[in-house]
Image (cartoon, rainbow, N blue to C red):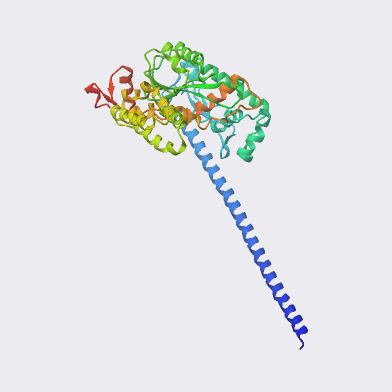
Length: 450
């Protein structure tokens, strides 16, 4: 056999084997594809089953909760009877089913109907009102919060359906522009009523203040949202004021304080805020006896901004030693050490620290258990970290009231998660003017409470 014939035979055999391998590879790929497709279908089917299971569980829980709520109300009114011995409150079937749109989908619920007309007519008492399922509710509160957030992000009302669909998928509510406008008008009324409420029935011991810049819809580029949060005698933190103005403006802050005082706010024991606020010039003109505490978080950031990056870690640790010291003496020692280290080469950083000296260590005159709360404006910062927006103003400004309303709605929702102050039982003693040195009460009788 000549060499040419051998080459042709080898070439044909190679092609045969290669074709066979290609077919095998193709079969393997097709098999893998079928397996992947089957897995995807199974996964999709399992996901669908899981979602259905979650929805069914949520529906059963919601239905059980509203049934129990109605049952408890009727049980509590069993002894209420008319002159003929008939009960004034009875169950009267169920209302028509309705869907509640939640973040996991639409949940059907059928609320029990309560006949309490005789109770209201005869006794004048209020009838049944569900706390779980308020009248006319169609969306969970968490979804309602999306609307204020989208508004503050600069989304126009006509783009709300598209924006909601991208967030919620197929479960997004079909909100028309007119619906959004109606909701906005309703919330504006809520904000205006809240902004005129009487404050004389409570006493607030601590207040936190700050000016938050929102890159949003405020027509004046220098404007910001002025925020005041208070802690009452039971240790509950509460939103006291949301207004617009200039952060560094004494006039803006004085207007906020005078409004609060005019509605019954008594003099707080301590105010906490950033040293750059115009608030501090306005405070003594409205609440002369309120003590002042500068926020250590703001102070730290301002000092570090005046130091090279290579020194910021060391400087931050030294500042931390000042406000985390167990007593004022140790804090002042760390304070003097910082000055000695940085004064010669970085006088601006030292000047930033020194200018608020008298107001930086005020917290040592209050209960030690409260220090974690009153050294910084964290109650405001942590809340607005999720609400704060870009640093540039949004194109196409909205109305002043609408912007304030949307910030109000989001903050009031966040308020539900705020925790009580530690050792809140000491707050009445702070209010009464009891003296504390390095966090410990001077009055021996209070030491057990502390």
